[in-house]
Length: 492
Image (cartoon, rainbow, N blue to C red; front, side, top):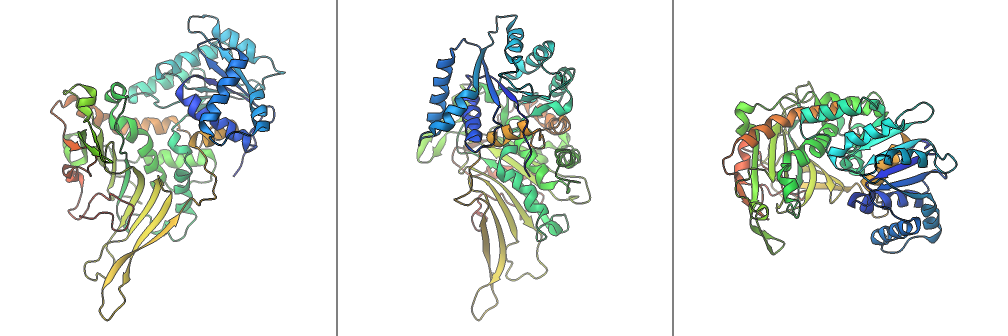
């Protein structure tokens, strides 16, 4: 499905920041290269410092050279540079936003449909919207106006609701684009389509056939130079509250009434609100946390989290696993095991679905699995039982393996897809406020309980597999962490 794009101006706040330099400007260039930007579309980059037009264009060239190692097409580059303007918004200048309005009001240069991308500190989201509104830049009298707010949308439910209260004084829900870059990934958008366009899958996508579901995001990297940020956030708020719960929503939602943004969002909101609250009085049976200790990753010795932080008192998790249940007819009784970790033995994001035992059991064969690989490999795999050729009746597991991405397919960055959606007015891959609230409502009690419990956190060696103690959340003894998309999944 493609949508028409109106002539528009994209205003990028935080122009000199890492996101803008590495993702947004190169992403917009690729959209131009693919012929997806309207001819008259303009880009106004907003930064704190004064930068001359020639210097800004030279800086853009350096961003593109860093991203496109084989060079850029001269004709497209010329066209792209002609779209780009720079505006200094000095924080000490009380008239900065009035000056920006004066710049943008030149209709001969800038189309009046405006999209503001706020790549700024979370504490600046509400003040920037206030100042845009004060200059009338959020009013939709004749033209559309949209505002992108980067993750995180709040740090808990009360702060998310406070931010919403502040910005909704000036913006309708249809104008607010809360970005979770995971939703721009083609592999995630494919989950819904594979489910609902295949008769092979949808009839068995329920508690009658499914034993349990695992949603996993693991990294081999540590927190790096983000120690202070990470210690104020933790794995639950960094990954589970946003990315992993969105994967869960796409995996479990009902068929939308239609594929409009409104229809898709309604289905996701409904299932997120049906997740059973985690019982804090039995938290140890439903959630597990740990921190990586020193260890070996890819043959290299690496320090532990507490060493990097230089604070042995921290109880912030770098590994988090939870057991969730969804209270609706499709999923009643099916456990969903979600986990995220840094410094584990592999880097992978996947959905693993284990089916119930078949009517005929031969030699206690393995149960069927369906695995959807999201990254690094986009694939769908099915494990089924097959007779071993020979005189005896024995079975073995075979794997049907299909790549979702072929070598000749376009490689589209998530931000490229989301920037295009923004200009199209398609907010189905952006979070609705009800989704953000449901996600915070679910994780807040766990984050709060863990923060209050100051006992030392379980340690796992960097580069190791899941901590043995994490299995405490499993419903049955025969359940295990699927630690690979390869055949057998390292079953114990």
